[in-house]
Length: 122
Image (cartoon, rainbow, N blue to C red; front, side):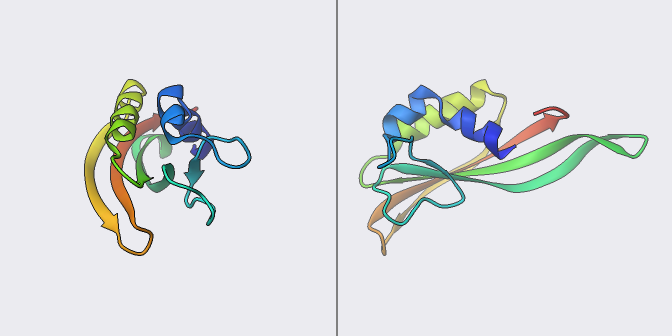
């Protein structure tokens, strides 16, 4: 599932806004960005997977809770809006979003949380 989510987040509308790292890869990271990563960048993680549909004691679908963290030195609005558009197009439902400032890194941090019902095969 993580690789499917990564592919969604590598949409050009997002990747072009976060730029590329020293290895020329888009700055979209599972769990945690490398220590030398320069903002802006995105981290993502699956927070929860719960069965949502069963037949004859076999799980047929699950609800996945995804968190995406945006880190920037300035405004995160364009990145946030691109992520929201791409995830909506891919069937994700927004749970909440909120902003904070990281004093230790001096970065703006916007959190987006989404739910997605995954039927067998994703």
